[in-house]
Length: 160
Image (cartoon, rainbow, N blue to C red; front, side, top):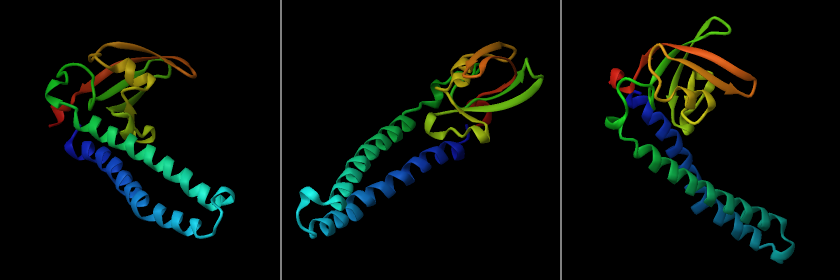
């Protein structure tokens, strides 16, 4: 995977994190103060909703911080040079349909099926890990078993 694509995944997570941290530190305290000014907190729906949103945002911030740490910890030098792994682009022949499909294996937070970016933790992504060009792969999907052959494999090292 090129640095630009790798950064886009990180940048997307970082942008969401920045927005949520701003909401947590500026917008929600303001909403809580405004709601508290309305009086009895035990029957104040506005206050209750702001508190629930605050709890959700705190949990999401923690989750995003973990994702950023995970993305930062990928050691590209340790990824295989001859087998499919994170950052690899694979051209597959769908043996059942006779069509070619191209996928890039990415981290879950970078996945976008419409753009051909599939997570290494998805059924297809998992089945492709550590496979080589020429390998046949059977994938159990929600719609049944699919059979692929890896026609071409480009690893993250080939693209650098």
